[in-house]
Length: 118
Image 1 (cartoon, helix red, strand yellow):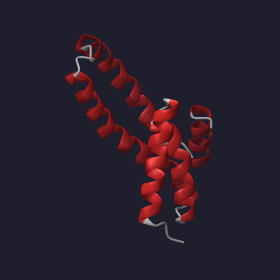
Image 2 (cartoon, helix red, strand yellow):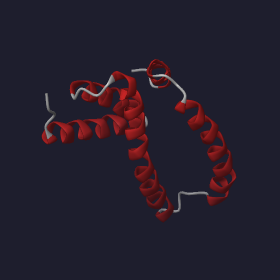
Image 3 (tube, one colour):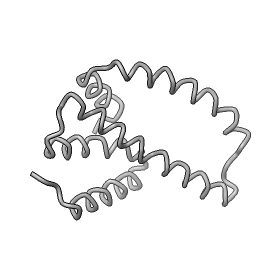
Image 4 (cartoon, one colour):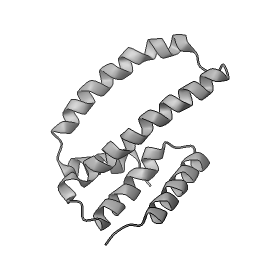
C-alpha cells in the first residue's frame, strides 16, 4: 500500500498544529505517526522505531536553528546561558547516542512510549 503525498502533507500539517496547540515538541507527536506510516509502507519492525526517531531528529535540527534566529532577532536569546549549556548538552547527547546504537527495536519502542506518552 502506498501513502500519497497529499496524505503526508496533511499529516505534517496536523502534527505541526497539535505540537503548537499543546506546546509539546513535534517529536512527541510525529514519532507515533511515523511508526504507523512506516508500518503501512512495510518497513521492517527491527528498524522502524530507529527510523522514526532519526526522522524526527532530522526535522528538529533545522526547526531549532530557524527558531534560534527568529528569537535572536527579537532579542529573546540569552547567549551567555546558551554558552553555559552548550557543552553539557553535547556531553550528555554523545553517550546517549552511543548507547542507543546498541539498543534493540523493542528497547526503542519502550523508551519512546515512556518518554512521549500519548
